Image 1 (cartoon, rainbow over the protein chains, first blue to last red):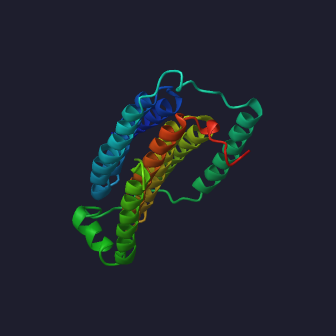
Image 2: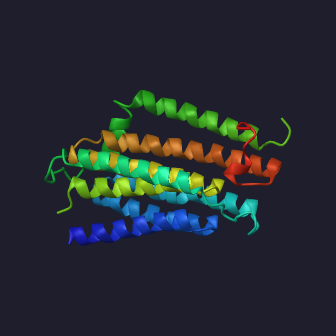
Length: 164
Length: 100
């Protein structure tokens, strides 16, 4: 039963990603990516990652994708600007070969992973537990992230201004 | 029974789809979304390892990756809008000023 749910969600995630990469219109691609991210959120829920699941829905499928879709609509690209120029044959071949080599390296690592599914407590991954961990062991990185977000906000305001 | 291998293969497949998107497409918006997809695939492997090693550190790292992705999205899209304002193009190979 669990396997069926996993394969369904995986199929949705992969087909959403493939649609995103292949669609010529970025708006269609963005909507496909939202579907893919929703499927990933469900996979996070299957992995007992309640906190990450909520963030995935709120932050990724919510905030970031809305920002991307707003930008696409704001740019209002004409069909002529969306015309795709294909990559050269040689370059394409090199890319595919490099990817296959990378994937084979990954498959080799896969055999060294442990079998079986370990038991986790019911509170594993809920907001309280992750929050406690984040504000104790990971307090310094947490503060650094807030500085980074502040720098990003200031940077965006400066970039978006027409005259500085 | 869904093992760690299932999730890792899915994560790798999504990551490589993202890599293909970055390398084969010329549209800056699609390249940008492919990077988001790759970050998502990495998040999936962080959470998978957290589940199968029974430690929640992976969840915290996934949170940090999401915060970084949010910052990157804001700045990246601002740069994209600036490029479109100045050059009226979103094709990556039109932006070859630093190359020639």
